[in-house]
Amino acid sequence: MDALNLFDLEVQARAHLSPSTWAYYAGGAEDELSVHENRAAWQRIRLRPRILVDCRERRLETLLFQQALSFPLVLAPTSHQRLAHPDGEIATVRAAAAAGILAVLGTGNHFSVEEVAAASDGAPFWFQLYCYEPFSVTAQVVRRAEAAGARALVLTVDACYAPRRESLERSGFRLTSDVRLGNLRGVGLRDDALTAEGGVTPAFLAGLQLSPLGWADIARLRDLSPLPLLLKGVLTAEDALLALAHGIDGLIVSNHGARQIDGTQAAIDALPAIAAAVGGRIPLLVDGGVRRGTDIVKALALGASAVLIGRPYLWGLALAGESGVRFVIEQLRHEFDSALAQLGRPVAANLSRDTVLSKHCVHCGR
Ligand SMILES: Cc1cc2nc3c(=O)[nH]c(=O)nc-3n(C[C@H](O)[C@H](O)[C@H](O)COP(=O)(O)O)c2cc1C
Image (cartoon, rainbow, N blue to C red; front, side):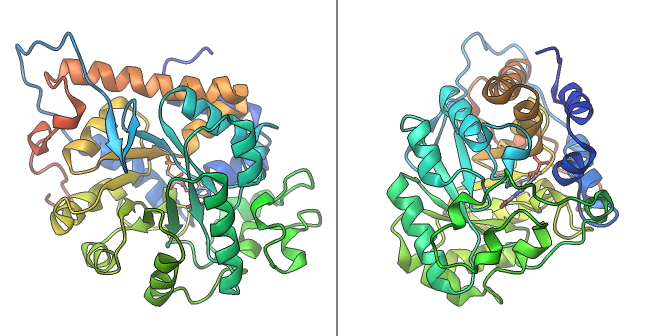
């Protein structure tokens, strides 16, 4: 592929995708202030290189819930990947496995978790959950994910209500009839939820969720499966502490790529306070606007075990299927590796707070 970085790829993907698919993938809530903030926050953080360190050998790998990752990158769950490429989530999981990392499948995927597992030769994956009404639907989805080999469950807690994505509404986005919701078939959901043809929208799907979702449901989910359970969409230390009290195994500090509510801080700016509250008791991951290898360095320095990316691998998927996703992963690996060498910090697992300036953020002062 002919791209020097992930921004080049984004330009190419925009030219390649239909305007409404672009609006669905790229867009954020309302004024998209937080979409911009998600990128700007990484750019405000300043690095502190050490000099004269022998960095000929670098160690990029990390361990997450007993699983070795070749470097600290995870592909975030994104619904409707089939809009980017016919191979959809299968290509994504295969590319992640070939690169020695991990993908998170989503409840809202085209291919069912069983189809992906069958087509990806035992590739490791996590499974992202939305809780649907009634709770028995959720229980069925969890059982299917477990049986198909999911290694962890990720409950998304920041998307219980339909977002206001005006760019999406303007584009007239609807799911087309060749995009299925494979994980929601045969689990007892209302039939009309599965009829993509005729105009299923993200807002319609959000309306099918268990409502209200509360901490009592988290406890029920906790009892449902022995798999590690992560919450995705945590932005405050208070909620991180509640999650710990409810036996949660890991947190994804995230504002959902700024797609749910506009005006939140970027997840990377929320990370330091959450890391301080959690004190290393459970792993923290962070996403939103990760586009450079130096962003991965910054995340690890501020207390994350790994980062996730969403949109960038969709650009790769759209342009070249599995090999396009692989390109995105390798681009970030290369940049991360190079950053470790330049910073005189050859071991990713040893990145500490002193890798970044202590007052990295002019707004939050952390
Ligand atoms: C097209 C698209 C669909 C998404 N669908 C889901 C989803 O179904 N569940 C979920 O938890 N997050 C979803 N997300 C959010 C991502 O998991 C992730 O938090 C976000 O994309 C990270 O920001 P980035 O795109 O700037 O890397 C979606 C994001 C995009 C771009």
